Length: 93
Image (cartoon, rainbow, N blue to C red):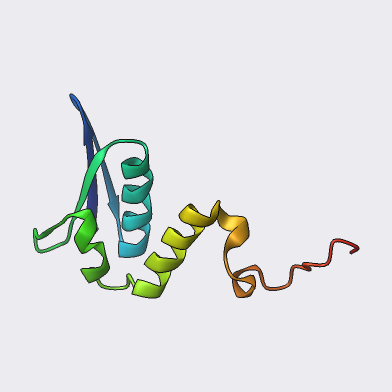
């Protein structure tokens, strides 16, 4: 597995290996929001700190920005309608 997320807090360490950089970043962000320190290591042994997550392959800035926007704006309900395709926004339906 090419991406390892490592989260540390106090004397606890959690490691998670994933094929997808996007999933590794999502997991790391969850731990960071809960007060953990996290980084991701790729298959070549390079470490990526949170400020460098956008440099990982398959992590497009638009996805990272959408995740940040959702967090700031109050959650997944505020993501663009295109992400909720097929769902009606009409409260009468």
